Length: 198
Image 1: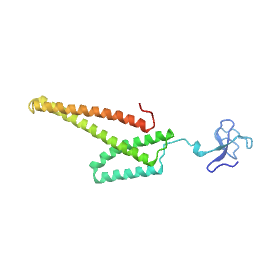
Image 2: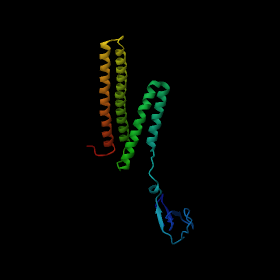
Image 3: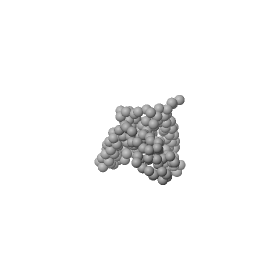
Image 4: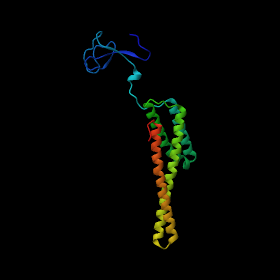
């Protein structure tokens, strides 16, 4: 039987339906006899039979190696800049990989330019979220510290209390903005993977 390149002809075991290479008399799985000439013969495409697993294209692998090299260089030269960059790049790469995988599973191919655009927008969103969360944490910490100092009565007085309340309000505003940014990120993710967003 003539088959296309990359395909092979195999028989199927009549008992367990396991695929058998040509020229075998016994099933490799259950040990039943496989007829030499009377068995059902099927054409198997190894690419179609292989399960879909998470894999990298060569361009994605080169991009990851480049980003890892940049991060290692930053860590060696300027650790104060390299550590935050590495922390920001992890969610960016994970989100980009998830979006690309979901879109390809839905039958929507993603070009290299779209991958770069997804990674760049993810980096921007992660940077904004990191800045807002850092501002909320800093303002909340400063506000609590100022309120505790003003409660002692020996330092600052009413002015210190007003500053503490103001910093706590700034922290609450930053938390509210972070919640809005998280909702926007969720809507954008659904839009990026091709889902309908209300």
